[in-house]
Image (cartoon, rainbow, N blue to C red):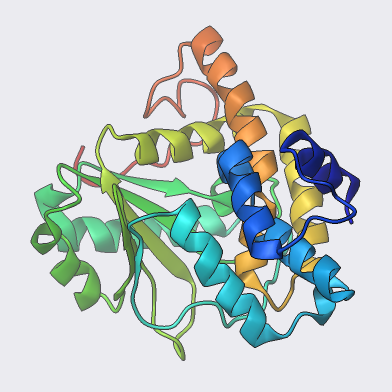
Length: 274
């Protein structure tokens, strides 16, 4: 078992050598650590109980554990259509990504009109020099994300059906069988979802050492979890949470605000109505 997981189990009052029922042990870990208790931890506990390696857990069992973990980590999330599927591919930064975003920004701005307060390039493809999955993440800030009639028909008209709904966030991407070149996140303007994703992006743009560490982590995880997107995304959680703690301190010192990318030296990516 991973030493970090052993230490967290011990701190949560669980004997790492005999954690007992893996589902119950993970719930105790989640009670103690919140979002830092991940799907990968659940896999590790299950594999330990069965005397297997994590890689040997059957795909059907992994999916059951994912649904179990997501119900606690993301209460209120509703999934639509298929999920998972495509292998994880992390590639070197492509200078063409900003132009690909700009093309989607213009299409989205035309389709959404005044419903979009801000349209921003987020995620790893928005950070020059950062290795990433070759999928453009677009964040659209709207006055009220619960008012889906204001944006959902326009997005689905562009071939981007709703894939997930959760408090403060709606997720759209092309259906299986079509190129997965973009995914769109709709959130409340001025809300915590918008702020966290812009802050993480701008922090990585401004801190090369964090960017390089994140690139290395993503490459390692893509090799380890190539066939398991859920685990790949979950395994980044600890890094992201730690980076956001550091980013908040940086933001206070730099007087960072949403929309400050250009002022702080990053490439400005906002577009459409503002």
